[in-house]
Image (cartoon, rainbow, N blue to C red; front, side, top):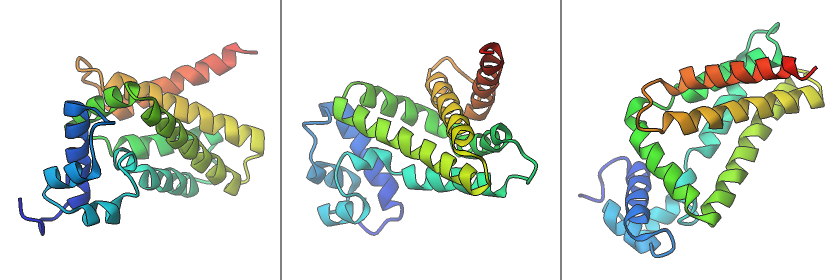
Length: 190
């Protein structure tokens, strides 16, 4: 593969996942990832600060997408309607061609405590992006935090279901259903 070919970032992500799956996260080096992608170590570090971050490449994009969608929600939208729209936006980016890759990534994270810690940090940052965006809309702190946490909980529940090989529903359908179940559960608390 020529070094000048496009999609260096995507090639690095796929190479890393392949190598982590084949030989383990700890045993894989940045040099090996770059070599597998047909790139240099310098190119790797232009895109990622370390090998752990290669698996969480879309976090900033996802956080921006969530916040932008909340910002663009109609004025009368409730906090749950706004986070529901944000969930629709983020889940629409996960097309069926990403399902197998996502399932492999999920398994890899589940098997490695360092990656689990990083995944928890990502989850918190996504919730923070939603909370901050809701605050910008004038939603008070407890309500904004609760709506954000419900959305993130629904997203991750849906993601787990979506990566299961037998599941054929879209991530958007699953996330809408999960958020609906959480809304119902909220009413049962009183």
